[in-house]
Length: 305
Image 1 (spheres, rainbow, N blue to C red):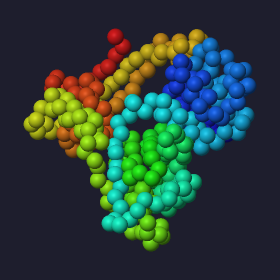
Image 2: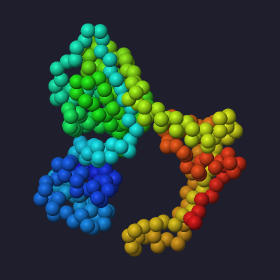
Image 3: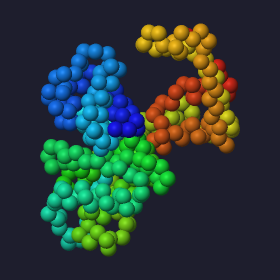
Image 4: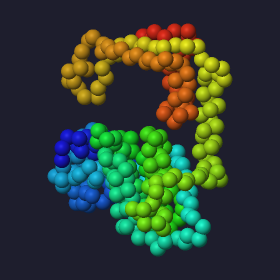
């Protein structure tokens, strides 16, 4: 197991609350009951994570095994995500096909990989004929980013697919085209990739409310008028290094750590105003960003309290 996969395991396990650790690991079903019994779950989380990563390494766990663990974690915390609902349409007179889950997985993966060179697709079956799909997107020149995946929940023999927010909005049409291609009765190699997806307004009622909230918060923060033109904002940070480990070299350092962060744009405030409505950032934005027009400043120094 290389360092990249080990780091993926480490970050995934660190997300799991200690109270849910055993439950999620058992649901993952990769480590045996005997192996889990030999793990000390009462030690500090950092040490526990190291022990679990070592166990995964001994079992020669792959990046796909780590992806499945991430799916299990997401299934337990599905309520924390905002889901979009896609309804796929069939042509007049087209009946629902007999569904073969294994064929679906194989076709779905091939279609995506044929359209995008670097993409990793993982599946996990769930209850009620549902399959969870985890897609780690890459680009033509970059490997899949395991830390910004999109999750899809698909119920077989239905026209509905539930998708979590996609970090790369440009990939949403590709995802929709993949479902349309598979669900068509036209042979796969002859199907043209024309997007024909529409959302059911009743099903995405919660998403509409969330979008209205984001718009309201954004307007309360920035107002409904054009923002003053500003091209950059600069933040100087001075802080003491904090660590839970005794004897850490940086923790003993008397001088504060210093760094400089600069945001630049042809129209910075309008760019900040558009972040939350575009789904790139949560609303409200950090006060460190929204205080720029209020304080009439674009130079800030941040120190420990």
